[in-house]
Structures are given as structure tokens and as C-alpha cells.
Image 1 (cartoon, rainbow, N blue to C red):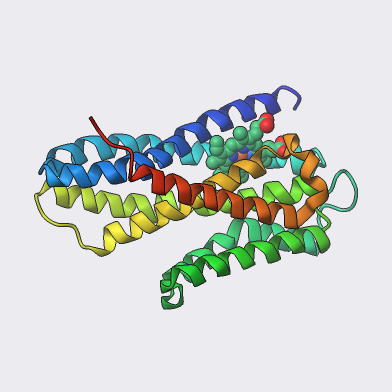
Image 2: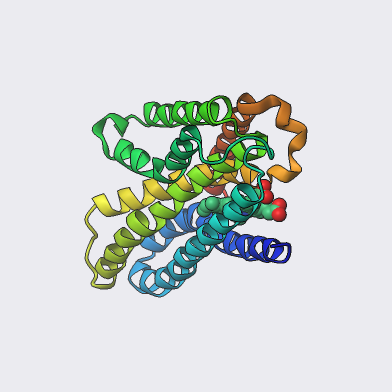
Length: 253
Ligand code: HEM
């Protein structure tokens, strides 16, 4: 166990960098670049050559990050006792429900963003924020998770939704987009809209997620509890918003 943990951590961070690095490339470089490429009429050549290669590393990076993340959860939090700060029963109803929310919450997220009510993005994101707040509160107050346990489970909930988006929303849509572009046809407008919105959600989740991942190093904020994490999520979202704004101003040669 002593040797497995650092090895899993290493693979986890390598795969995470691969995945999230490409996610940020797609969002902060490729979106403005794609507009220029379209203007130049180069999409038919560049998209079928670039996107399958980039999406290969992207989706396998997501799998390896998720699998090694779950292995770390098992090793450090359930077997190692970090979930409840070493106190209390692991298999309580509250714990099982909150674990269910961590890994199955993705289906609530997916259904919500498919619903017409989520058409208003401000409302959609606000509901997502309130949902996260309620889950974090229940993890702490009902299930008795410590700071580290609560933080990593909110991160794992985000990460699971992100990996789901990669495999079941972005990749299937991109396959059809690439095929259409290669054939010189315009893809069905719903496809770039779906892939684009889920990629944007992932980018917004990725920055707060990284805070939750480094919880062994952020103990100074443990006293701020759930409220502290919620503030970090808002700061992270603002940072992503600023990065998107900046990305439209960075020029090519
Ligand atoms: C996909 C779902 C994910 C799960 C279930 C997960 C799970 C975990 C777990 C359990 C830990 C150990 C935390 C601790 O010891 O307190 C961890 C650490 C970490 N994770 Fe994740 N993670 C996920 C996604 C990501 C992503 C996308 C990245 C992006 C790079 C990432 C980067 C990290 C980093 C940098 C650490 C800290 C390593 C350390 O301090 O030793 N994780 N993750």
C-alpha cells in the first residue's frame, strides 16, 4: 500500500495533465484558431488531421485519470480512513448515499442540462452551484466527512461528470462533426452546440477541481469548511471566465 499510493498518484497526475492540458488547448487556443481556419477555408484539411489525434489523448487521458482517481479514493480514503478523519463507521446509510451522489450525480447533471429549463445559462449554472453547496453540506453535516473527504468527493463528483462528458457527449458529437467536415458538409448545428457546451462545462469545473485535488496542501483553509470551498469554486469560475476573455485577444503571427 505504501508503494502503491505514490505510484497511483504519479500516474493520476500524468493522465490528469494530459487530459486537462488538451481541454484547455481546445477551449483557449482551438476555439479562436478554428474561426480563423474556417475563414481561410482550411477546416476540411486541418480538422480531420488534428482532431482525431488530439481527441485520442484527450479521451484516454480522461479514463486513466478517473480510474487512478478511484484507486486513490479506495486506498487513501476508504481503506486508509481519510474520509472520516479516522473516526466513525464507513458503511453508514449517509455515507453510501453521498458516495452514490458522488458517482451518480452525473445523471442529474446531464438531465438538468438537457432540460429546456437550463436554456437560461445563468439559471442553469446557479442551480449547479446550489446543488454542489447542498451536497457539500450533507457530506459534512450528515455523513461526517472531514475537510479532506468533503473536498475530494466534490472534486470526484465534478471529475466523474467531466469524464462522462468526454466519452458520452463530446466524443460522439466530434466523431460526427469530423466525418461531416471531411466530406465537405456542414455538421448538424446541434452537434457543435452540444460538444461546445459540455467542453465549456468541463473547463469551468476543471479549475475548482484542481483545488479539491490538492487538499493535502490546503489545510490552512479547512476551518472555512463548505463555505470556503464554495468561495473557491466561485473564484475558479471567475478565473475561467477571464481566461476565455483573454483567449479571444491572443493573436496569431
Ligand atoms: C476524474 C475524477 C478524479 C478523481 C476520482 C480523483 C481522485 C483523486 C484522489 C482520491 C486524490 C488523492 C487526494 C488526497 O490524497 O487527499 C487525487 C489527487 C490529485 N489529483 Fe485527482 N481525481 C480526479 C481527477 C483529477 C484531474 C482531472 C486532475 C488534473 C490534473 C487531478 C489531479 C490531481 C492532483 C494534482 C492530485 C494531488 C496529488 C498529490 O497531492 O499528491 N485529478 N485525485
